[in-house]
Amino acid sequence: MTKRIAYGAGYAIAIALLLFFVLFPFMQMLSTSLKPTDEMFTVPATWIPEHFTFDNFKAALNYGNFITYFLNSLAVSVITCVLVIVISVLAAYGFTRLEFPGRKLLLNVILVSQMFCISAIVVPLYKLVGSLHLLNSYAGLVLAYLAFTVPVAIWLLRSFLLGIPLDMEEAAMMEGASRIKAFFHVIVPLLRPGIGATAAYVFLMTWQEFLFALVFMTKQEYRTLPVGIMDFKGQYETNWGTMMAASLLISIPVFVLFLFIQRQLVAGLTEGATKG
Image (cartoon, rainbow, N blue to C red; front, side, top):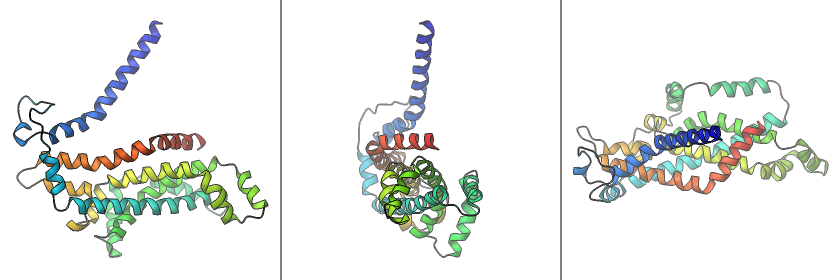
């Protein structure tokens, strides 16, 4: 009984510490965004503003390029998500259902590619995209995002495909269906949880990505939201209230998406990991 109580207390403390470290940055952003400028640097610092204000949110929304940055982020994230799903579903199907020379070697190469730090491939990708004259374009940034999202997506979807019995596809083909028809009418419907989980992962990764967007989008009209909020940082001063408000506004689509797909995302990733 004593051990059970001690275990429960330790578990509760661990969860409380984890929640603190996770929620602390968010609470700090929220507190700062609701404070007038003269309260941000008061000593001692206060969590609850004495005078609540939404001026920082109004300033962020009224900033001329905010909507442009939002649309840029949305376009890049959606395009990347669609392309990754199409490429990864077909590739994962090939790796699990088809026999061809070098299959295991190629699969291992895809796995090894994930061992490199993302920052290590920025310069090579920059030179590649530059040689294709795709800098400051959706196509160039999407191409860069494909480089580090497709391998992960292939492995995730491959795990789901390994859990789909081959007999179901063979039964459809014995009934006269072609491989393509069996793929679209049998495999794809069964793969929907995996596709949903993978699509959510890719969207979240590209929505909040900063480094590639900073390097590949040098013109202001092509910037995405994570880079665009740097406009509130001047050479001699930083508008912290507006920057924190903009950061919270950027987080809203992520929170909304997670609320809608959290069960599918967690169940899908867990199922895929178990089957893999």
